[in-house]
Amino acid sequence: HINVTLKYLADYYFDSQNGKSTHKWLGKYNLRIRNSIGDNDVALIDAKILESFRQSIKANLAPSTINCYFDIISAIYNYAIQNEIFNGSNPTKRIKKLKVDNKRERFLSKSEIIILLEYIQHNPTLFLFTKLGLSTGGRFQTILNIRKMDVDLENRIITLKDYKNESTYNGFISDDELFEALSNRMKNIGTNDYLIREDGVKDISKYISRKMSAVFYDLFNHQLDPTDKSYRKRKVVIHSLRHTFASHCAMKGMSVF
Image (cartoon, rainbow, N blue to C red; front, side):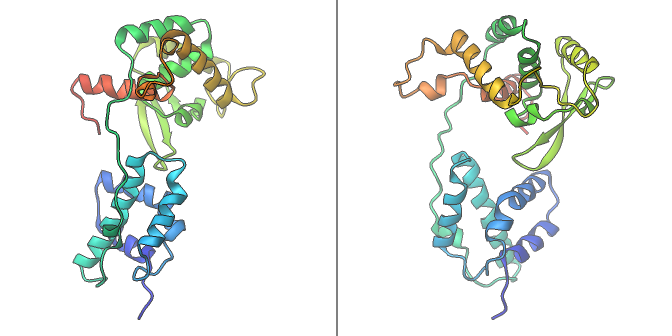
C-alpha cells in the first residue's frame, strides 16, 4: 500500500478545477484543512478523525461554514474516486451535517440607516466605520484592517482583505458622504496607517465593539427581551451592517455572488 495523503488528492483536485467558487474553496482548504488533516493517509481517514477535525473548528465558525469544509473534503474524495486515483470510499458520507438555521438575520431599513448615521455623525471614527460597513459589506476585521494605501479615491475603489477565505476583493466608494469621510481621514494619516483609528486608543477592536454595541442598544435593542427565543435574530450587531449591505443589494436585483 502506497501512502496517499489528502494533500495529494487535494492538489490533484484543485489543479484540475478553474472557477471562482473553486478558488474560494482552495482558500478555505489552505486555511483550515491542509495543516490539520492534509498529511493523513486518505485510506485511514475515518468518521472519528473527521469528527475530531469538526470539533477543532467548531468554536469560531457558523454551522453552514463548517458544513462547507466537509463539502470540500467530500468533493476531493469524489473527484479522486471518479478519476480512479483512489479506490476506497468517501468517509464524509458517514458524517451527519450540522443543522443550519437559515432564518433571515436582522438588517437595517433605509430609515434605520438614516437614524443610525445621524446618531453617530459627531464621532468621525464610528461614522467612517459604519459607512464602510454599509458600503462594502466587509466583515469587522476586514474594515479594521483597511489602510490608507488600500484606498483609491480617484477611481472610488477600496482593496479589502477577506480573512475568512484568505483573499482580496474590491469594495466601492458608493456615495459622497463616504468619499468625504475618507478624504478627511486620509489627510491626517500616513500611507501605511489604518483608517479606523482613534487618538489614545490602543485596542481599536475593543473600542469599536463597545461603542457600536452601546449605539445599537440605544437605537434598536433596548426594547428587546434577551430571554425571547428570537432575541439573537432580532438584535442589531456589527455583523448586521454586512447583512444590511447584502440585503439591500439583493433587493436591487444584484446576484448574491
